[in-house]
Length: 305
Image (cartoon, rainbow, N blue to C red; front, side):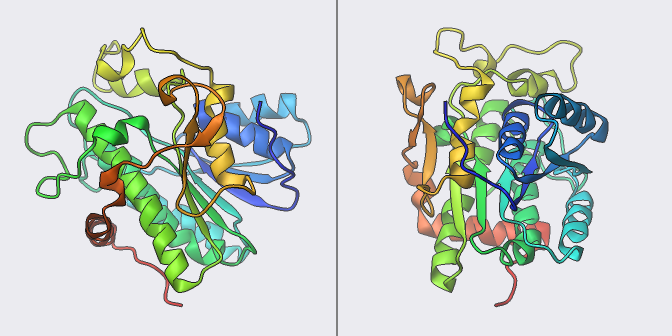
């Protein structure tokens, strides 16, 4: 298993830290000495996760704070509270997400739920936290993508899926957008001479509540779909599945703009290795176009040097 390097004295913000890979990452980073801010939509669930972690690691420094990535007002308040502390944030882990709700839902701001929660919310959060990140000596933004990014496309003429909504392809679009964001932020950091790393990760086929939670939205029972019914593929538990995002977030060997995931069968299980970035995610023109659209929709932008 991956051994997290010493994180004593560092502050790490993790979204979706109450379950799955986010909770596992929070536990292991706190155990390594980090102060971990657990950014969660439902504080009660975050506090239960915090209690679970503290039972295993009694000395862990954990803070639960409310953040709803599907509501830009919540994103702004969360970021403003952290920035007001005038303390460095060493790492932002954009981990939270929703997968494949069977019918189209929208965020508080009217965005398609997956595009809004998985991409626009994390984009805005990153922009708003950059002042605090840049106070750190070696800041990093690690963003969770997915293997589904390989078949994703950005529908620039209908990014909100107002026409012919597809749960799976809308999810793939949001995860491709996350990877394009990772690549573009790395390019910007290099061009501006920032000492900031932008890294990406995917968990392979890790068994968490992500597969069932999204499929349950608007239904009494989870709906079986392509993304939650691939029973014939190799799977892994969350302890292994969290390792790519841990590597992307804190490993000294991680590189700016790189993407990490399982290196075993079909890229779905196994120890962490460098993952291939889809050609569409490396399209510079599309990356800049998506970035401009995200700035317009979220009304956020890069800080002025």
